[in-house]
Amino acid sequence: MKAKTKKWMWLGALGVLLVALSTGWYLYNKGPLDVRNARGISIEAEALYRAYVTDSTSAGKLYDKKILSVSGVVESVSSNAQDEQVVLLRAGAPGSFVNCSLDETVSVKAGDRVVLKGICSGMGEGDLEMGIAGDVYLGRVIMLN
Image (cartoon, rainbow, N blue to C red):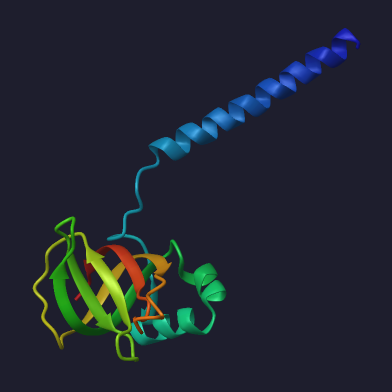
């Protein structure tokens, strides 16, 4: 192999390595999404749930890992194992909910109409044998109203 060809191969490999390292450094230091100041896709809780039940693949492409502003009626408020406040929004069908894990404690009660903004992580499986429908999950949620 000619010396000139080897030189260009080494320079190309070095260039690829620098781009990979730069990209990795950027992604490592980028930090988490700022849910509060980011723009969210506005949708009703029932429409979001229906989208996942109708065609989970298409809904996943539209909503998974995206920031959503979901409006709906509160079914219940509780706490999870991480001691985060969890708000269930009614999703139309009995036993179907949009499950929202809040970053901050808010004062809401069953029957309140709210708008919550968070990152969608898709729909859980539920348990067909027990007749339990899967929920659509939102994480890092804040309350807008």
